[in-house]
Length: 411
Image (cartoon, rainbow, N blue to C red; front, side, top):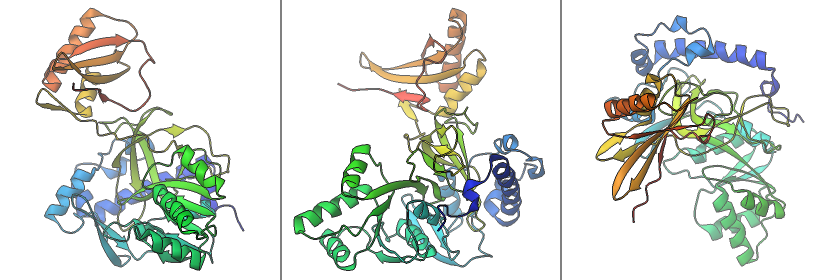
């Protein structure tokens, strides 16, 4: 049996790039012709001019707030779906509320690839502890397991004693759910004196998987890998047995951009994860997840050749309220672009002597009082508040994706 889900996972870089660009251009034609949301958003853009990845990166981002606004005007999906293909099976609800579709397309959310990389194979019994209530997580992994030929116990969350008893009785070989709930199940089994060691592998998501917790599972003979996805996009990236970063799914195109902008960052720099879904039914173009990550160099030791990311590294939404005014990363970016001398910058918000203090730390080749004064003027003009300017050495600011660093502590 192949170590890979399909041949797409081991494509050469040139072959993948050519296929991705063709898919992106086809998707742009598809959404402008078949969705009212993107027909409106791209109405003044010549889609035929998008001929490479650089020009694709000039397209506007789509954010959750825009989904929410359009859904309020056009229920249930705001004009983002195409329902002339696969049958609509489910409508899910996330906080907001934002509604997400589930279509009849096999493995609609594409999580089968991540399960396969974790060793799930047809004929196995999978214990699914993601919620089936309102959120799509339960159905996401249910449909993925069934696409591989697995049977599924739709356990959901809670009822820990029943969970343990069911595992002891039915001996599933695999678990999907959050890592913390897996830990609870194992501890409950110990208390009840029931054996649940039939489970030898797990795919977890929805929260962090710290190294000590992964080690605890390994001590029990349980191999645990994680994946990253969202209710809107499905699978984005997943771990393989190499456990060196998360490999991007073949059904999406991922960019890492500077928070507050749509501009791709340099390789290895932390930025916001922006995803384009290549599916036909719920196509999202340059969807800004609000999550921070960074690309890893090279390919995975497992042989899968797609881009890898470091995993979840925080949130990109760094809006801060200062002296009654909201300051957004977009405003900081505008300040930076006014002054070509600034290579990188971050706005530090502190609480000093019972008052908010702003300091824009700027990486520049040399300190220049006139430049500092000009940058301070730009802060006042764009952010509508006064701020200090500190020139720091090039390369000295942390590579953590932060544009606004709110370190205020109130006594």
